[in-house]
Amino acid sequence: MGFTKYLKTAFLNRWNLLAFLGGCAFALLSGRADVVLPLLAAAELAYLGLLGTHPKFQKYVDAREAATHRVAASDLTVQALQRILRTLPPDMLDRFKNLRNRCRELRQIATDLKQPGERIVGRSLEDAQLAGLDRLLWMFLRLLHTHFAMSRFLQATNEPEIRRDLQRLQTRLSELPPAPADLQQQRIRKALEDSIATCQERLANYQKATGNLQLIELQLDQLENRIHSLSEMAVNRQEPDYISSQVDQVATSMVQTEQTMNELRFATGLEALSAEAPPLLRPMEAKIVE
Image (cartoon, rainbow, N blue to C red; front, top):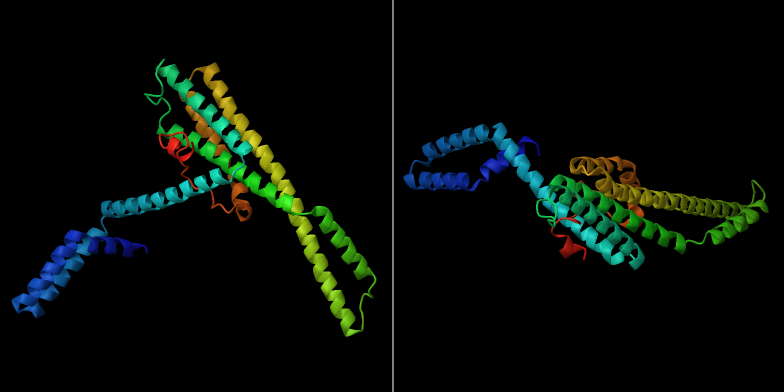
């Protein structure tokens, strides 16, 4: 929309609308609408021009628009979280909950280092760090869901059967002349060639899915080990600020993991990973995950 959105917001301001409509009513009742209405229109254009071009007003409009988008994205993220939790089998769900509990231990250790004996009262891991842990857990949970979806796909695909079909079709094709003169033979050859291409494509998809599954398994182990390492580091180093910086570093280093999940959206049905993670460690977690 560009500049138009600023003008629209300025015009639709309730006080401006009240003044504008009141001015129109006054013009009609005054009997001099031919004089008052042009003056009113000029005043309105001047108001829109001044307010719509003001940098502070533009920043306000942009901030309000961004907040609206964040709320919508947050709602979609929570819906995706609930769908994942309903879909995952118990063993995968337990793996996620165990890792989340390890993150809680990390948070409590960091709190005890600054405020011994208190149960997460002072929040030594501030919101930014908690958001980093939430993002790690959100990536891990999505990886689990992707692993589950790819495993189901591979279980539903019979590789030996595809190879048998491919071999059978190639054998039939080899029995035909390379360039048959008969029209019926040409059609048969074309149908066989198309079927062979389809089988080869299915086989390539299966092999690619197998490779993706192996990559996901490695990335799950990698992310899980990193979070465990952060927990152990909290005990050994006893430096809460350093622990917080490591959380952020791990969260930003998982770019390749996010790319893998986004590339496999066709199998998982999930949208691309958003910048906002659901509150897995923050106060709402009990309502969403427990």
